[in-house]
Amino acid sequence: MVPLTVGGTGRSVSFPPTGRYTWPEGQDSASGRSGEVAFPLVTTPADGPPPSPEWAPEREVTAATAAALIADRFPELRGAAVERLATGWDNTVFRVGGAWAFRFPRRRIAVPGVEREIAALPVLAPRLPLPVPVPRFAAGPSAGFPWPFWGGRLIEGREFADVRPPDAERGALAAEIGAFLRALHDPALVREAGQGLPLDPMRRADPALRAERTFPCLDALAALGAWDRDPAVEAFLAAARDRRPPDGGPVVVHGDLHVRHLLLGPDGRAAGIIDWGDVCLADPAVDLSLAYAGFGGDARAAFLAAYGPVPADREAAARALALNLSATLAEYAASTGRDVLLAESLAGIARAVARP
Image (tube, rainbow, N blue to C red; front, side, top):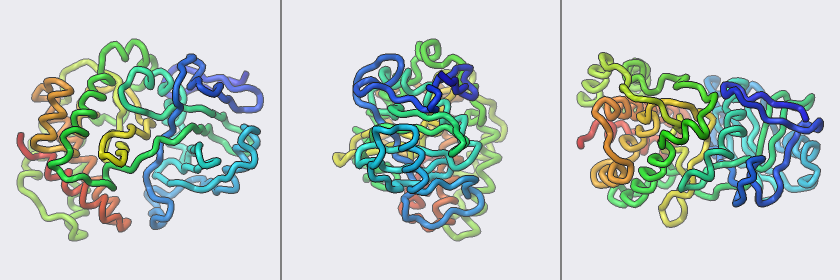
């Protein structure tokens, strides 16, 4: 077996000399957990505009290349139809055989996240109340492709940002996400699944840093004519510059939980939480940002009723990150012509400072 060391986790995943591993059908991982295997749907539509240099790939995998790599590593999938499904900043996803999806990194910076997903998700999945991606196939680096990749069954659903349910109809969904995060943030998971995970490597729980990084995004949005300056937003960010991170112990967090990483089913309820490349240990504020960007009013109250009390310093950090993520997504959407994402992200900016 050839070990694949999982960057930033202190763990390793072993692959046979072929550079691939397939977990038995009905078994999600070497842990022996039975049940459905899921794979995330990466978010940018395949037919969207070409990426700007900021998120341009270092290595682009075509459908033909993906088919060859998959056939070489996983002969049982040889001959299956392969089509590009979606492209994100860091990964490209292909639908394989109509039922599977494979995720290939596009940039070296994404590799540690892919490795963390391979190692951490099989441990987390059985402990969470909503579907999350779990690898069914995993391949290490090879002469044909220098980075690991993995695949599994699709989590069917549409991005929350694309569906944009009316605010008045978000209450049941908010309660589901609150309950999901209550389970994810259970301190027991730090002992069970957190070994070796990095400690808030992006400093997303630091409200002062988030504020500093949000101002340029808002300036860009204003210059594009996409956002009218809001004194409440600017006053909140000015105050956040003087805030310290919350005073609490770290928990396991998704790490990048925003409106593009929550999938909804046809009934508007949660279908799954995707894109776990930033999973880490951090203050719960990192994930609670979704409560302030995605929900307001009665829906936010439903979220918090399901999740539990949030101290004032944690709320302030969550709101600061909600502003930062919403502004970043809005700038991206405005620059690439994604009008629906822009509308939801701009609404997230307003929600982040709305009371209660």
